[in-house]
Image 1 (cartoon, helix red, strand yellow):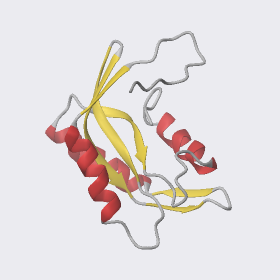
Image 2 (cartoon, one colour; image 1 turned 180 degrees about the vertical axis):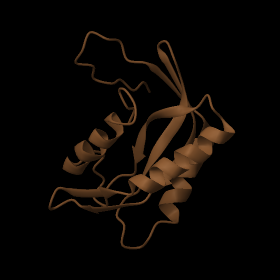
Image 3 (tube, rainbow, N blue to C red; image 1 turned 30 degrees about the vertical axis):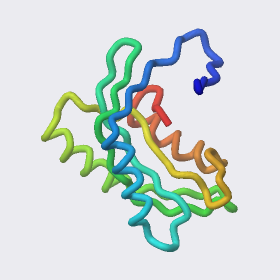
Length: 129
């Protein structure tokens, strides 16, 4: 089964390669979340080359969210310190985007997702979600 993305610009979409350990890290983050959290978010790290993005690492980012009020508070200090630690280990990896799990009702994207994406637009160009 093929999956296609909607592209509204003339710029072709990059080919994204996702390492299996990233998927396992995201699942682990979700399983270990606080009982009060409905979903988790995190940063995707990898290498960007012309037309390709290889995502090889990720880390969770603490946040608070009230979807009924359009409110998201991301712990930016934690995000910056974790990226600084990762950069010491692998200088080639850059911030490529972000991940989130679905809401309890199964929604992939909600209004708050645009707020999170705005934050990541300040961290990298054309963040992958």
